[in-house]
Image (tube, rainbow, N blue to C red; front, side, top):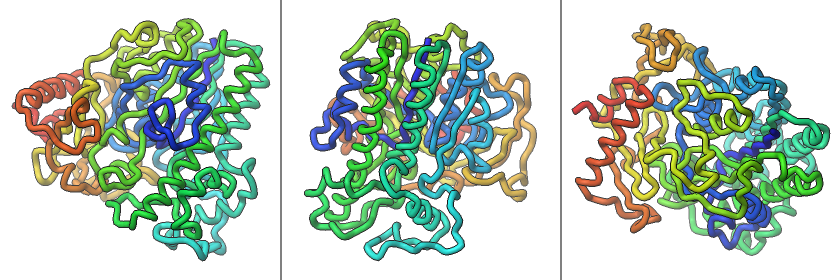
Length: 499
């Protein structure tokens, strides 16, 4: 067996033609849908970037126990398990969070080999001895003088053409691996790009496809939205959406090169192909930019997902069963190589869903540490908020105390103690570290209350449903799901689920 897994960051399903978009140029995603199974009810689990990747490695939700961070000592890593079983695992990525002090410290080492492409977003790649300064046409966040945006401006100065763009380099390296090893067997290749994550940086020739959308802001450089409410005029909202569309089309172009190679080398007969993303992105819908600080509306939570499995032979078909790629792909890949999942994995192999849409779960939970905990059955989405104004009790359970970009500060260990083991920590007692309310992303008022949506009647999630009977059903389902993953008891208290 050979498996190629393509992973994007912040890819919005509503911008892809297989999911009904008619204005973004994505012919290769349409071509992929013709060659694979397209999943219509695919949801996130742990949010955002690195929590989703920890889910993938461990095959279980992690957002109830801790925030963004490295793999824990007790974590089962799917790439490491495959490597131990004799499968060569290789990742090529430009996702710079993998090489930050806090978040990614020990992910890449789980693969048999890894290749890193530099230069995305605020990757500290090029020196900042002299900040190149914002473009004279830049507006809003693109004009900020902080280190993060300064690094981004420095990195962009090293991009002279499409071949220099990090995503293009990622796919080139991935295709090189395939060319070298297409005739070999027993390997797993992860081609992972940070795109189309913000900033939505593209070249003029990429934006030309959407020239008509740039008319009112032709001279403005603004491709990096803030995590905030939309306050910009309509022409600037259109500008940002056009920039995202242009970058999505770049993703489509690179995907097309992979599909071309699989055609040329006749790989469809013996190579599994998986294409997915960690989450979506809000581009002005619900009056919001970005993700994480607002409720996880469908634009963020419901994701594009495609699988070609040569053993099943299902192509050009769609599936409605509720799936969660971030926790289900690990067991699915293990199954593909004949490796048994561990007892701690709660994700499910998608073999039966690929075969005939037989469901692997009734409901799926998803969320971010310290935020609303959400549950869906594919029709309803219930968002459970904290029952307490101070969002307590909330604790990090970890032996790898690190945030996104640095280790925990000494002061954060005040009140820390050794907690009791969880069912999946293999008898190890984790640190139990109090987490202040401010740990979670800034909240808006919608995050402070419980919300219920009927997606059949209200697919845009503009009218919260008042139905006590349905809500009671999902409260019980949420409690059951949380118990199944051995959620901390403090989470039940925080969410008012103890009675």
